[in-house]
Length: 263
Image 1 (cartoon, one colour):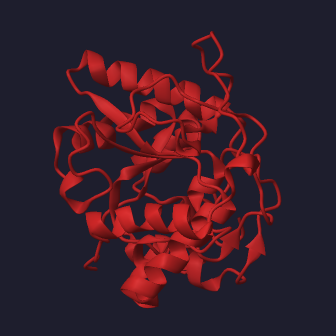
Image 2 (cartoon, rainbow, N blue to C red):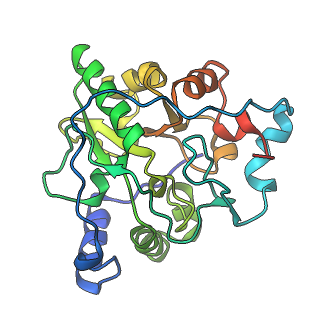
């Protein structure tokens, strides 16, 4: 499936609209960034539920068959699924958001630096391991509030059309970024950040091979667009815990296939 990405000019326009029109949360309403704790260890991952034994055909229909707008029962579970059919509780915000001690492609304070604590510690270890292998990663976008996602989605619909927007942008409440468990990643230069040209770069290849060792998966893999509902995004990693990440990738599955439609 061909994906039409927004242009750099369009992305800059989103920021301008947010500042001028007030469509994102007012500055006074934004929480202060939380400094990362001193320790550099990963807490024990949350236990992962046993994978389903349902057939692949049933699993591939998970996104389409799930009740529209079904709300996640436990949004704090690191193995939760959020997609086009399964949403977070209204205005959900994780209570344990911190700033991972990693490089970002921007310098200003911003909520998009944030991740949940367990995921942030794992991200730090993954970035450090990549550096040892000569791969220099940088964060692009982590946590995104309901209000910010709403502004982005509405802008893409207005400028790109709804059909195109839905290929790469989630409706508010349905974005993985709101879980605090996802991070868009690029190389340290920011070249090809959140863009199709990131595919095949040394950074993308390293992530594909090593992310599961630190509890992350490429959430929207190539060839699985009809299952995840989104186009291939090699830069978008999602923390699910080491055990779940390794098994999911070893079996060549998405989270929808791993857990099945009953999740």
